[in-house]
Length: 547
Ligand SMILES: NC(=O)c1ccc[n+]([C@@H]2O[C@H](COP(=O)([O-])OP(=O)(O)OC[C@H]3O[C@@H](n4cnc5c(N)ncnc54)[C@H](O)[C@@H]3O)[C@@H](O)[C@H]2O)c1
Image (tube, rainbow, N blue to C red):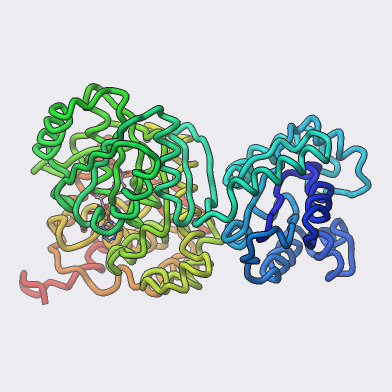
């Protein structure tokens, strides 16, 4: 097997790695040394010559060059990448999957002391207050390091090697890979592949639960239930599964009442967690039940659709629909954990996958250049459910980038006041199109894609969106097959729903429009412009009849 030692500069990856390798007669690979050898230059010189991005390209190539993980039971290779390598999701996909990643953790103060004695220059720290620089790196990287098994790395070398040995023996090569783990203000977020059962059992253990109430629906549970249940039963927990109606039909007050009565009959208590296993509709309802039953019980989300993994399970918004409109009754209720397992998406129908990419394109347009490139290169394959898009890590990277972007926005603005409005890009007309279709014709992400096209066109006409930026966003929508063709709704109906949009403030709509690198909010978009742009996305009407 391959052991991968990760950690901040100064955490002892090389010293521990060499000793560990020697003990097991294994090969030690110091990736920074390999990069220096290949470039015939020291790392500071590479940074100077090629910039950090040039160095990161070389680093990615070196990690790809490791080839497939060694599958034997004994330790054959000990790999020590540079401390920043695991920031890139592509590197983590390669380093954590089928290998045993171990995090050598250490306090910044101690690491700084070690670095002062080290002859190696670390470009990201050089010239800065080392303790502060290391603290910053600890914060920005802890979610990547935290996905690996942690070993306190500050002790004497021999005892750290013993500890690593122990951890490797205990964990071995996991069946799946944890790619990210973070304790955020909006719940613990864990992302990985084939992790759901194991991580869920851990989370329920952390909550001290002896019993878990799983709320799911036939579509999601039929696809993922058997595996999850087997993993959970193995952990000794009592599992009770309640199935709600599939899809939007779950989001009614009568389903909430029936389910709460069921919980009461089962004598579910305030400390018994509810585990929501399903897509956005199931998660919204189960979340609302968790928010209100006994005035609130703990909630763990296990999202099983792409929409739920990148969007709806994050942020604590729960709720159900009324005949008068969607999501009109609800509550904010943050989960204790969100367990995002991309393997659960394997059975998802193509239309659901593709539609979810509407939200992903929105996230890219909000300013994630790498997400843009990823979608341009692999969006069509992801939409299609091409297994190569899972195998090469594209799906994992997409999920992580979108999910984490949402975590950051929501954590900065939990109750949806200012920052979170950015997420509304494409949603004003998107919601209106969705409503005009009676919430039956269009999946949410499909409607958002039309809304994004509208936002681009309004932005260009209003002088907010550069023409080439708008063209790039629309080309990407074409490439993933979203927002194409014209919608068969009446302009009057669309404008009517737009007027009812709940983001309507003091009589004016607040439009989130793309800029060259992100977004801007404008409340002075002329009604005529909105009308013209909306009409351009609808089937033209001849004599009152759609032609
Ligand atoms: N709370 C929020 O912040 C938020 C954000 C966005 C959307 N939403 C809500 O999310 C809902 C849409 O979510 P959705 O698109 O996930 O829809 P959904 O929950 O209706 O799921 C879509 C379909 O996929 C099936 N399914 C689920 N998991 C599956 C799997 N692994 N394999 C095969 N089939 C599976 C379901 O049975 C269903 O038929 C809407 O109600 C919307 O209002 C909420």
